[in-house]
Image: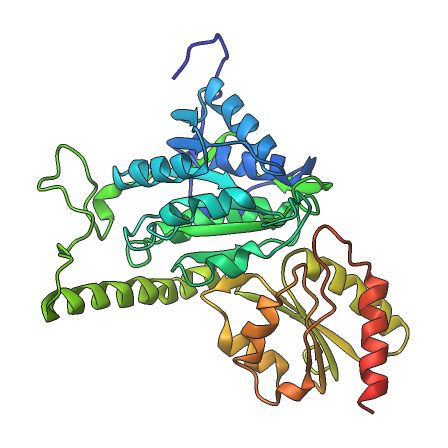
Length: 390
């Protein structure tokens, strides 16, 4: 660690439960990128590797500041996003706690490495700051990246605001590092709407940190000079055309997805469940995640003031998808609207594939490429839908 004459305060090791529920909180006025950097500071991270890309760049710079203060053990900027994610993979394979972050085209460029993380059983945490991808070039908010991450085997959280960004990042390490889980967590925030929106965030004391990561309890040995022979997985998977190879690979993939589902009890313990439900008996239900949940929450409040019987479901965890909770929340609704900040409607497809009587579901409104979604837009669609179906 660099010696730059900065006095580093003594830090006390606490549990994630204490940090999230019991520790005294101080109110700070932060943008989302600052909130996630505060989480990295308290997560006792060993290694941060990043490549700045809008709207993630502030996190890259802030983590560099943490390293300069001696609050993380190693830090560097990669040459590009693929280099970053391969480096993160190497560090996590070596048995250290890793943080990284990217956005939009960076996610696409690094997908080859990102898709390998779950199979390596790496408990690293990556913050994805969602923006448009593809042509024409667009740096504006969009949650389309989640559609590309859904089937990687990662656990995926979708934050509504900067407070979520802090809390879910702390929870992500505690969940990912459970020996029965031990797969990566994507903490996804909609770019600008969360990353650059300044709100009150309640933080535990800076002097409190999580315990160091212990690779000795991992289900896969750390890849270092003390652990021989060096392996990527507990079982040596040989890429050959025979039944044993097929079966070994298939079993390993099944175990990755099973690990995701074993995370549910830890999600319930540290995040209060995968969904938040308000007015579950309502005739009209707004189901949303991320920034769309923030707008849907306001639309619900206004609709109820207008006399409409409207409820709200915020889906906090996208993978493992909370199928039982969503089905239960939707069972009494006559009309279900699913607002999203993307063009392809990935959340609507997720809900439709689980909930019966899909004629109740309106997959929208949807905005994308940086367009905003005022609550009035959701209200208008709600009035039109109810009028057309009554």
